[in-house]
Amino acid sequence: MSEERSYQIILSPHISEKATIVADQNNQFIFKVATDATKPEIKKAVEMLFSVKVKSVQTTNVKGKQKKFGRTVGRRSSWKKAYVGLEAGHDIDFSGVE
Image (tube, rainbow, N blue to C red; front, side):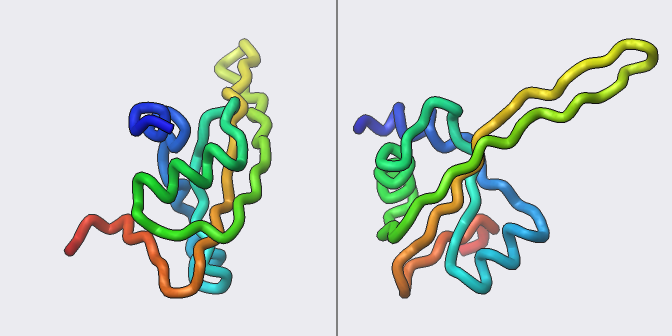
């Protein structure tokens, strides 16, 4: 897998209160990924980009919410979320502080 495809698969980390709890308890990290990405592709991309060993990958499709904009009704885009479990001793630091 090329590095360019890795950047197309992993769109961004999903930072939330639940994501922080999951990271602390289960050594899992949550990423927003491309909707056409498969579990083996996600595993290879995370291992390549962050130099860690991935133990497991679970994915879920998040449906876009229906929202009202004045009188018109719109819909947010659907997206895919990946829960990536890491082997013991591996960690990803998103703070950017060395």
